[in-house]
Image (cartoon, rainbow, N blue to C red; front, top):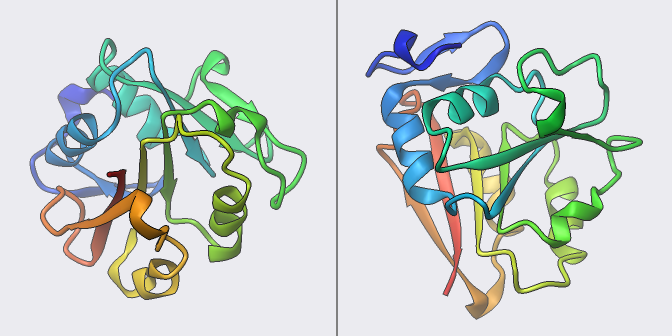
Length: 170
């Protein structure tokens, strides 16, 4: 999707669970670390959000999608896509990324596995985007002690029933 086709109101697209808007992309750009610091979008699906974000802020965000199947990705360039061998497989590049992004993750346990294997202080930011009603299932997973602060972004530019949670290193 071209940034010029974005609107200020969140809009659903066939290839993305999350409603996308110009304000949402602005919020993500202001939240995620600046390029060349790496952002991993874990479970990127079709890559529509990530590809749109790259087009929206090409010099500001360096984002790579992580997905299981090569056939799922429709939008991200091959150079911005990593693949893992299964739904519970972790990508080694997560250890060097400055940020992780989880958009409509299916299972809190995968997020927890990533967090449990975190061995570097390079990770500065974690973004979770999904239905407000799902946040309760994930909130305890993201309680990372004093190292990270959780901020719920109520007006992030997503649909009214969606929420953005940001975990930032203190």
